[in-house]
Length: 156
Length: 156
Image (tube, rainbow over all chains, first blue to last red; front, side, top):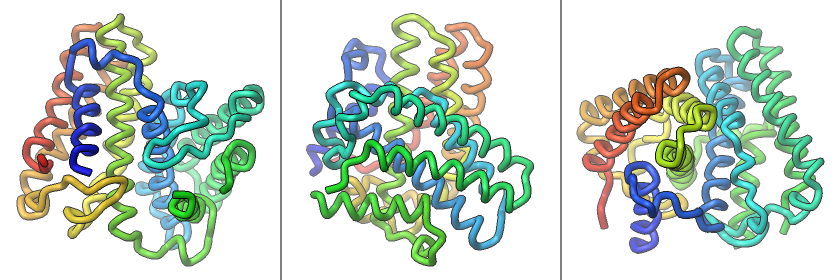
């Protein structure tokens, strides 16, 4: 485990700090899958905070911060994490991406665009809207997550 | 592994989609550590893209997207992921957070504030600065990562 961790930390240190050629080698599928899983865990964390705020008493500042993070991540170019071939392999755990993600690119693109649109709309609404409007738009955002899971996530 | 994955996915689905009481239970230390590790992996991915752009030919739009994501994540309240007691335990892997993070809160706060400041400055510079200025500010940002690693990350 420690060896594994050192490897992971080493990769991160290279990415963040080095200027050497190593940092520019094409990342391995395992690393790409790990990043992808990490991005969605991060989004999941931010979604959880929003859900708690919406259910337990709307705190605009809390929701806005999480909404801004989700929108910025959504806009940062997640397509780069869907490299052909990464429907197989293991990051933190076995990937659950279906091969259909690559064979049905039109559908994948449609869902990705919806996700970005609803995330941007949610960030706007979170900044100014009332609790009911924010909750409604959060529903639209999470529906795009569900669409992608229904279409492209392996079950078992 | 599949069982493990189902558990993870179940947790995410609850967080994103449910309105039930389960989603509002206090998250377990393992989940908090997993989120924390995922957030820094996400930041590491964005940093890697910036480094490649700065080393191989400055692409402002690419750097700006990644910079915006880092800043929004930094501003989203990462302190919530440093729950006392989570200097022990395993998320995706054993945590490497030192107990000193909690016993030296003043230093931890100082580094956290520097990280947020430099991330915000970097997002501003990425939007308008020339390549040299962007590179210089990226150095200031990654120095805050290194400060935290030097101070609060276990080695071995």
